[in-house]
Image (cartoon, rainbow, N blue to C red; front, side):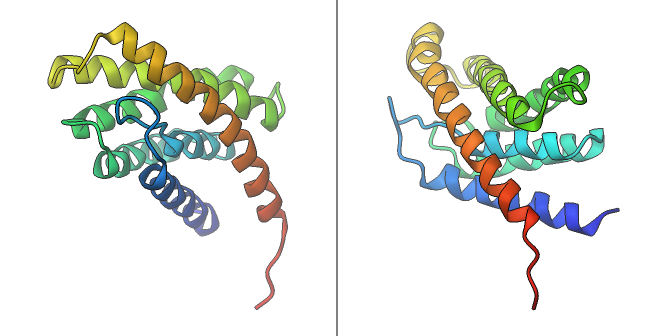
Length: 169
């Protein structure tokens, strides 16, 4: 077990939870989930399945705690678990082909759409939706995809720069 990776992943998940809590709503009280962008960054930095899935489950629990969607706790956990599995499989063929910057852009865009679709589908079946699936997808998931892609790229660059620096204490 690599303690440095464990601590780094924990810090990234904590930052994602804080950003998820502090993000203002965009439409109908819903807000983009920045913990997703950080989950995808964790998945790019770590290529083992156990780390990616455990990070997905923890991100789901942290998102469930900070959600503002009525009854969105269970859909958040389901969403992050399924999204982590799908995106791990999605990353496998491109992991050694593309550079990390492009992987972050592609993964956050595709992953946010997968996550939003799974979240809305599970919320529809578990608690119901305040309006139609299509309206929520077009007004919440698509803007969140654009925002997460931009924020994911910025956060990846900041994390990459910070990880290169050595701190002498």
